[in-house]
Image 1 (cartoon, rainbow, N blue to C red):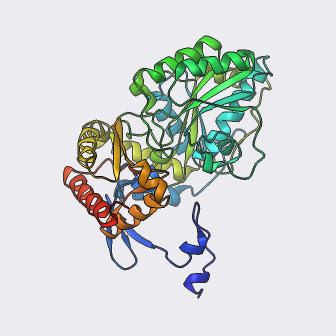
Image 2: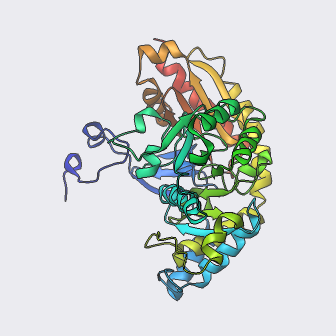
Image 3: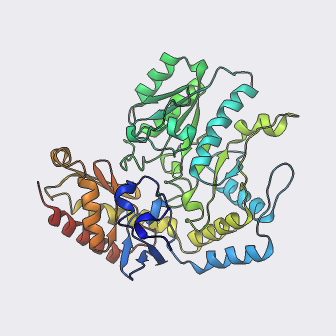
Length: 420
């Protein structure tokens, strides 16, 4: 047995000098609740890492995973190989896609999917005779995973670690379509391949788009022949009340990156939805190969979990329920806006929200979000510390009573920390 302080598990995004002495070991889960190894219960106010959309412990998904393991545990989909769950899931996703002629490229998760999309857009332009179009645009505050290209596309300064980064990546404002167009013109549209955009910025602070911004940004991209890549890793599969998030704004993207909610975390799975015109060079031209892929692309067990998740979302009406819950969540969070530690609330676009903390308090105590996270956890609710804010993204099965409990715990946590 390892001494707890010397256990070799290295946690992502963690200060290991502290974490090694203070781990919270989650041992089981049920619907919106998770339990640690002492038996203490917590309301999962963040759906784990934004992904447990249908809640924990769903028997339908567990049974689908078990049944698939009994039938075909694993086999790759490279070259001409396929499996039934991957074929079925690709068909289900293509039918729901917010673009024409959709094709589905599976990966193992969101970071894989971002790298896939970034390589794909560059390969697309090379295939159609425009190899100079290599520049990838992203927004301030953006989070697109932590793989090589995802790190380069990071709009959160603290996440840009271990340079040098992938070249030909340029940041633009998160909320200004005119500046996006100005950036494209300055760079030269003939050099710009794609614009990566979260419908609602997630890890960068839960930032809903200003009214009309996404529509205007999509028009700018279309006018200059720049591919619009919607990063729906957080926003998809009910989080914004629809399948991929971007449909809410009437935008028809060229590619959509997805993961997380597609299986509600029951299995690792991600992918890219590719519009017919972007797929065309690789599907219809002899010998044109996109030389890219992950070992577990189209994994039959992960695809079975996704098919079952889609079934739960539809059967239980969770997309419609999300559209109702977003209003309640917004009202509950706005009820905390009067606290002296809170500057303002961001909520009302999907089952997502954030409390922005008072800037002077954060400046005086940079660890304030982490301190509040710990204080609220002591009251049995898990939230997400993010820069200068606290984030909320509960499972779509959350009830009004759960949200009231969450708000009470947050207010008690705020009071316990107090104004410095």
